[in-house]
Image (cartoon, rainbow, N blue to C red; front, side, top):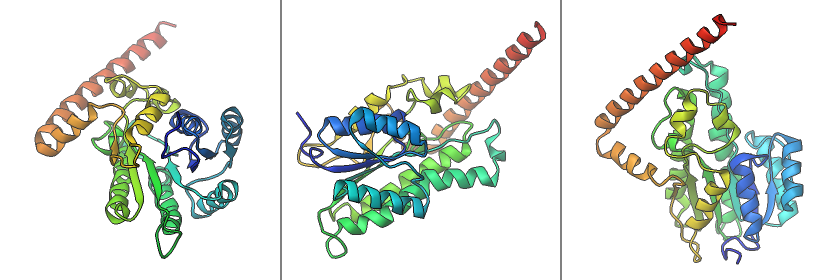
Length: 283
C-alpha cells in the first residue's frame, strides 16, 4: 500500500544518479509519488529515470541558476513540488585535510550546503500562505552522521555536513509550524561509491554495519507517520542517537574518545602504508 503522505505527491530528488539518491527516488515511486530525478551525471540519471518511471532533469543542483532551472523543469513536469530531497553531495577529502585547498572547500560548501540554501530559498515561499499557495511541503536533507558527530580525517566533509544539519535545523525552527516539514537523514557508512573511495576510513565508517542505500530510503519513509508528523532526525543507524547524546552530555569526554580513535586510525594508515611499500619492494 502506498504511503498516504507520498502517494500522488510531486517529488524531486537531487544526486539521484546512484546511491542514496537513486534509492530515495525508487522508494518514492513505489509509494505512489510522481518523481523528478536530477544529477550532474546525465547518463546515470536518465538510466534511473527510465528504470523507475521518473522524469530526468540532468544538471547542477547547487548553483542559483541550476536550482532555478531544476525547479522550473520539475514544476512543469509535476505541476507542484511537494517533496524536495536535497541529496546531492560530494567529498573531496585528501590525506591531510587541513591542507585542502580553498577551491576544495568552496566546491564542498557549494554542493553540500549552498545547494540546500538555494533550493529552500526558492521553494519555501511557494509553500507558505501569503507568498505561495499555503499547501506546505517537505524539505529533506541528506546529511550524515558526520554532521552530528565528526568524520576523522575529513575536515571539509565534516564541516559542511554540520552546516547542512545546522541549516536544516534553522529551517525547521523558522518554518516547521507553518506547514514546512524539514528532515535531516544522517547515516553512517552506506554502500555507495563515496564509501568505496574512503580508503582506510572505509572500515571505520562501516564499524556499525554499512547499510544498503535502500535501507536508508526505507528508514526515511518509515519515519513519516500517516498523519504527516515526522522526526527531524532520521537515523538509519540507530546507534548514532546515543553517540550524539553522549557528545552533548560530556563533550570533553567525547572528544577524548575521538582522539583515541583518531590515533588508532593513524596507526592503521601507517601500517597500511608500510605494507604497500613492502609489497612494492618485493616486485
